[in-house]
Length: 360
Image 1 (cartoon, rainbow, N blue to C red):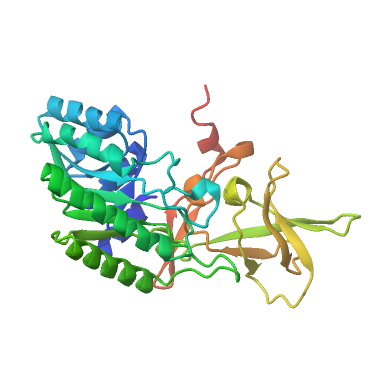
Image 2: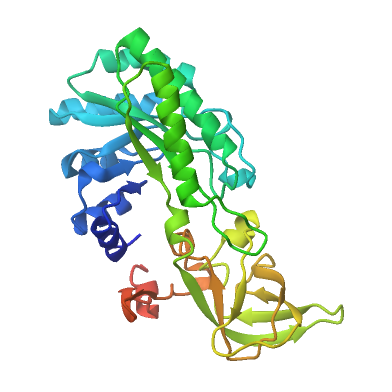
């Protein structure tokens, strides 16, 4: 999330989902159209809501009753109206890691359909400050099965029908989220994006037509599926160590601080040497330089690496840089965009002066 990526999204006629003041601030610096911004999150702060309302007609994805009341309160103070959509928890499980599931009933995100119906009178009583647009659902990340997505459409259609019949609230937008997986290694079999989009749009038309509802605008959040594979991370190989047990560790000049995903939820990656063809069949593990035993980027990969080789790890365009840190007081690396064959540095590498700038 940086200004160059935001501008690239705008040039591509895509929308943008944000979850913090910092992301909103970045979007505003890049002059992104606020009507195409969807503001997510389960704990939107008063300062974030206020900033979003001042920015423009941003779409709030409401997560809970407290947030809904806070939006109303701030809208009253500013004498303005907020566009809102409810985040629905459909109680649908996906086959992914527990930490990246978001559609099951115990998820920290969203509200059940029955909870949303109980909150609807609040909207009816505050139509001067709330503009109800529709419903949002997100099942989780790195999903590789189509069936749960199809099931979620039925949940949304049923709730939309009930809101229309009982409260005369028309659902004009349906956001079916994203989380579509990408191919991190040879074992992954992601859903093709065109197949995913066609299946969801077809199911949405069917379910809304069957319930005699006007067709809403369909919004999808491909996210990782369009940017994940676009990014790679380059490391320089450092020390190589073989243990008495036979395990061989190849250390690189990064790891946990620039990619915490393998340690957090056992994310799998593939890699190869960028500077030469590797004709070896040696089994090694790629490890980072940080003071954590869990700082292992890739276990058991066939790689005949040597010190000073350049290692390229694929599929790091999503989440990696956004979750990077200064762990062990290490500067974040630069981020480079290759456009029309030319490199453009879109985030400068941190210096040690940057690291210490805010020290008291």
